[in-house]
Amino acid sequence: MGLSPTIIEDRMKAIRREVPDGVTIVAVSKFQPIENLKSAYNAGQRAFGESRVQELLEKIPLMPSDVKWHFIGHLQTNKVKSLIGKTFLIESVDSLKLLELIDKESREKNVVTDLLLQVHVASEETKFGFSKEEILAFFLSGKYRYLKSVHICGLMAMATNTENTDKIREDFRNAAEIYHEIQRICEDNKEFKILSMGMSGDWSIAIEEGSNEVRIGSSIFGARY
Ligand SMILES: *Cc1c(COP(=O)(O)O)cnc(C)c1O
Image (cartoon, rainbow, N blue to C red; front, side):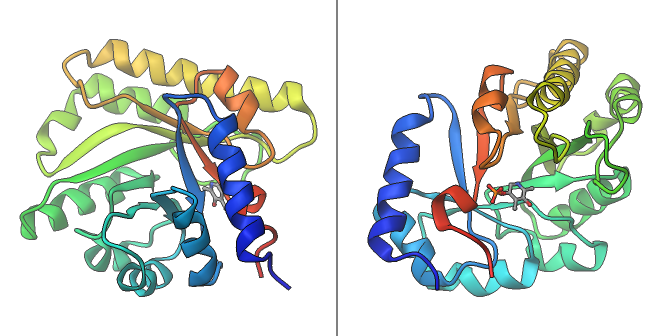
C-alpha cells in the first residue's frame, strides 16, 4: 500500500518548510504512480526527478506543463535522442562520450541542454561518474568551450551508502571541493552554479557541506515498489 494523497501533501509541505531558501528541492518520483506526483504538485512542488527515460516520457503528458523535469538516472547512449528537449536539467552525465553525444543531439534538435556532470566521490565501485582527476583535467583542457549546445551548470554527487555520517560528510566535502575548484578554473562559465547532493537520508549533511540542490524521494513518497 502506498501513502495517501494527504500524507504525501503533508510530507511535501513539511520538507519544503525544512529545506532552507536557496536550496532547490527535486522530488524524486521514479517508480511512483502519477497520483503521487500530483499530490506533491498540489503541495507546491514543481521540480521532479526521474531515472528512466521511458518512464519520464510517459509521465510528461500526464502532468501540468510547468513541471521541471530532472533526469537523474544512468543515461544510456541509445536513449539520448529521445530525451533531448524534454528536460529542465540532466543531472547524471557520467562520461565525456555521453556529454559529447548530448551536445551533438541538442545541436541537431536546435536546443541547448542544461546538465550537470556526475562526480564519483563514494567508496563503492559501482557508482557512476567522473573521477576527480578526470573532471579537473576536462576543465583544465578548456574543451568545455567547444560544446556549444550544452550548458554545464554544475555537479551532481552521491555519498557512500553507509550509516557512518562522518564518511557521508567527507564524501560531500570532497564533492564540494571539486565544485569550487572547477569554479576557479573556469571563471568565465557563469552557468556553473549548481551543486546537487543529498537524498532522503543525508540531505541536511549535504546542505551543511554546501549543496544547493537536494534530490528527495522516499521521505516524500514512501517506499518505491
Ligand atoms: C533514487 C535517487 C534519489 C532519491 O533517493 P531517496 O533515498 O529515495 O531520497 C536521489 N538521487 C538519485 C540519483 C537517485 O537515483
